[in-house]
Length: 57
Ligand code: SF4
Image (cartoon, rainbow, N blue to C red; front, side, top):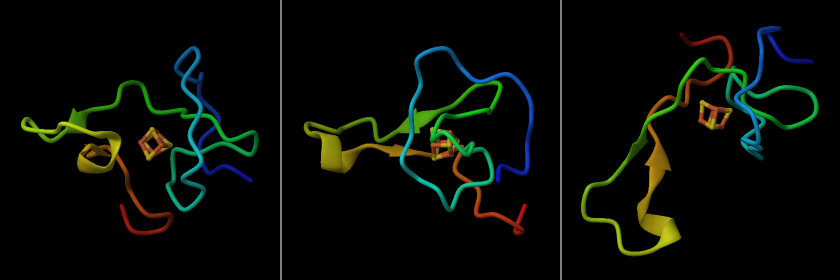
């Protein structure tokens, strides 16, 4: 079960279940997210810098 019960970002689904912002229905409940990698040219080169492991931050 998610550690956070706030509103989810509309339409943002996320499969990263190890993140503390990930809800039981695999959505993001962070108030905002930041996607990093200024020189990304494909999906694999992007990442969510808002990710925070459960129990660590
Ligand atoms: S903060 Fe990033 S990794 Fe965590 S649930 Fe939201 S979109 Fe996924």
